[in-house]
Amino acid sequence: MDKKTDYKNVTSRIGSKDKITHKPGGGNVKIETKKVEVTQVKSKIGSMDNAKHKPAGGERKIESKKLDWKTESKIGSLDNATHKAGGGERKIETKKLDFKDKAQSKCGSMDNATHKAGGGDKKIETKKLDFKDKAQSKCGSMDNATHKAAGGDKKIETQKLEFKGKAQSKCGSMDNVTHKAGGGDKKIETQKLDFKDKAQSKCGSMDNATHKAGGGDKKVQKVEK
Image (cartoon, rainbow, N blue to C red; front, side, top):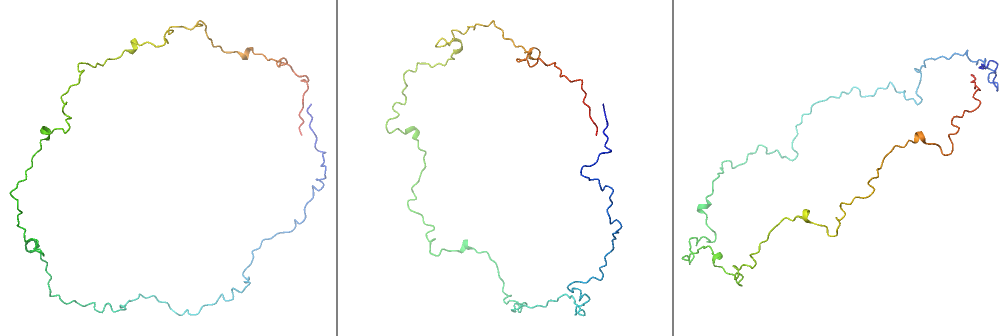
């Protein structure tokens, strides 16, 4: 059964609603906003006492003129600015010096320039040396140059080795190469396990899986506030 709760006669426990109809006083006081007049305000330290003071010297005019510099050197460096050096009638000529034709040694080193040294009748000849044909060894190292070593009738042959066709193992490791291991008639199968359909609990935890708790005919009602 759904029954609505009546809150009309409910009262507060601490009397918080005793003065619910109270109106605060002071509502008849009007707060006005006026513009503050500060024209008559004076400074505290008399900073405006000389506000109308005018500094003297206002009749003086300050002019700006371009300066005309007529300066002179301090040490008279320009006294002879218009001076012309004398000797202008002298001409400086440039001539090529003929040292090659007229120059002479200071100590007579060219006195014997045409001298011919004695022994000029000797002729120095240049000949190609024939060491290859006439030269001989000092210690007889070429005495057996034409010697032929014995055993020259032996022929060295190169043959390809046939290891693949003729080679055999040293320790009989290939004796059982054709052997077949036993148990070859056994087949290994892989099957999917169906635990979901056939598996059962070990301790009977599923014995009361379909059990329904008593008291199911009782209805729990929710009260609205």
